[in-house]
Length: 225
Ligand SMILES: N[C@@H](CCC(=O)N[C@@H](CS)C(=O)NCC(=O)O)C(=O)O
Image (cartoon, protein in one colour):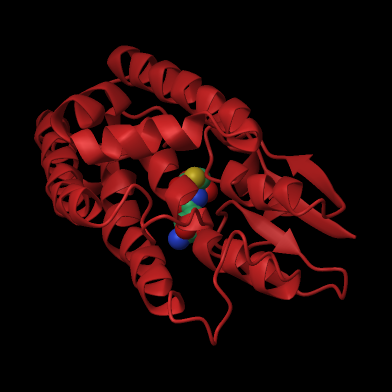
């Protein structure tokens, strides 16, 4: 059985959603990042980087990096409705978009949520957060153009996990602004959000995003150190 270390205000629901979609048996171990449980000796023994999610495979391998975990599970369990197989021509665009989100969008989301870690002076935090948001928006603008030409999903008429991956970060950034500004992303977001397996996750993410934004207002020095 798999073990997933996840919890509120983390990206672990992305992995949990793949596990659920695939009907794969797993145990969820919740880590409270707001209270620094990810820096406890117990969790650092699992992931010395103190980051979530972590997936332990049935063989006992300890795996990190959310994008890798999603693709690994889909490949290993042959969930071709979530990820085109390696010989499928759609695999190229699929991987290219997964890597783009992992490499170019997620790091900006880190700056967006933890601006205090990237600034020497508290008064710069707001600017760092605004810049991170505008960089993500410009990347989403490119994505929107692509979806408008060849949508409604990233792979055209075919849904895959990358659509859920993208919508998850849209929900965490500011779904209202994104959907107002980018019509093709708005269409995608509504389609993905209405999928039976995805609704709960995106609703929860929207709630987490709103709650985190509220906490940022009341903790200008950083919600999590
Ligand atoms: N590159 C890693 C980053 C993981 C990551 O930053 N996770 C966040 C939760 S979404 C975390 O553990 N944050 C705690 C911290 O940064 O202190 C991935 O994509 O899985």
